[in-house]
Length: 395
Ligand code: IFM
Image (tube, rainbow, N blue to C red; front, side):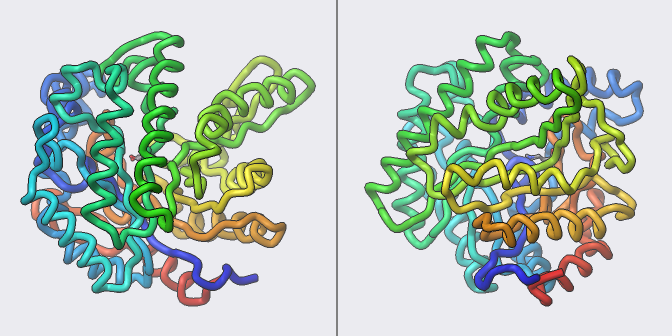
């Protein structure tokens, strides 16, 4: 079977993880926490591992990186605009940075890559952090002002993603307290996701007013919960609703497409979670379970939305699993398409090795290896195998 005509093929990145020299709540948090995180790793990784610093210097090398994406057969690319660059002070938009992203979008177009633009991928400008970040009363309004300005500045962008993985952000930043601003509590988790859903809704309506023809979605982290036994099957339904469907339910009237970021399978047996077989795992210890993407897709049929796989990737420094990982995920996606799911594109995470948040630089997700000392790019074998699938348009 083949993928439908016009299918979008590419890879994804996010500003803070690749650009370098950002100044936002994360960059400040890294400086304060690098020593601690290094100690927690038993000094396996030095403090520098935990500081995004120059990252991949993609801010300066985006043309070179897009040349690589083109040479790999991609016809689309997902990236994010860094809010803290564009609006470093409240209400003041930086013309130089607007020009920068104009050049980024033009560079994609010149290479035949369709831009998929994320407006918020977890980082908060410092002025907004001082006002309480997503807990600030004005958060939806501030986000909408930024989003509207982007839609006006870049009218030829056809695909906008408002938010990246709001649930993961709320979980780690507001419930587990391991990401900035390190708050803890279940109520805070719900409060954060609710604030983000309001921001999405308001921004959606504002962007549609500016240009009704563009497509707007959100990239949601969706896990496949598999229930084993009676208790597992009941519990699985419950967590599936809370994790995969709750946010979607809030925003489903303001949504053209669902972006799926699929990484996790979670087998629920009796009252225990994560009873996975873990036959194959990534360098991060995450189970590789391609079949899960099929079940996630099947569970979204009732929403009747277009679907893009906005992330699917594996940390695999030695490039042992990646080739098979991509092929098998695509096989399961094809099966879902064959059964009527409307999947329109696949973005591998990530084009480049990059800064993996509180884990730092050591996890290697890239189709392209980055030698951080020299910033040299080396295309991995699996990237060429992905290209073969793209060229065939099928498996
Ligand atoms: O690196 C992240 C990305 O920022 C969001 N989705 C998951 C990726 C891998 O953890």
